[in-house]
Image 1 (tube, one colour):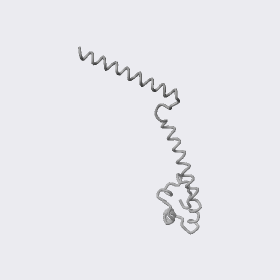
Image 2: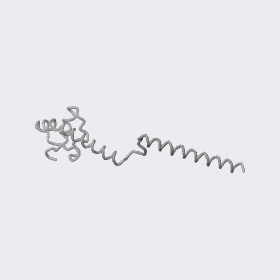
Image 3: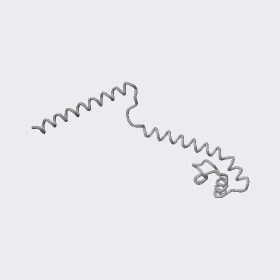
Image 4: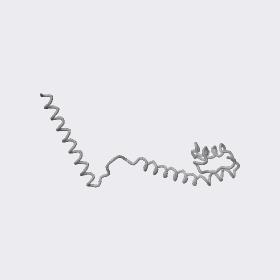
Length: 108
């Protein structure tokens, strides 16, 4: 019998917690709070746009430097990357994938 009373009290407490939680969520929604988790698909799409723009801007900024390096006689990806590194530009991965880096280099 004691166990039955404890179970009834626990059930009542669960119902009270549920009511308080629902009331708090309703009040938050009425205040205009944004409920729920983030929209992952939208966040990924936005991040992709930012990454693409950053890559385009970096390629645009490096284009004159690469042109100057190529005019000095460097035509292979390795020699261009070495010249960029000598100038303090992190060239790791920059020229490896021309489609992603958007930096066309002769002889590739």
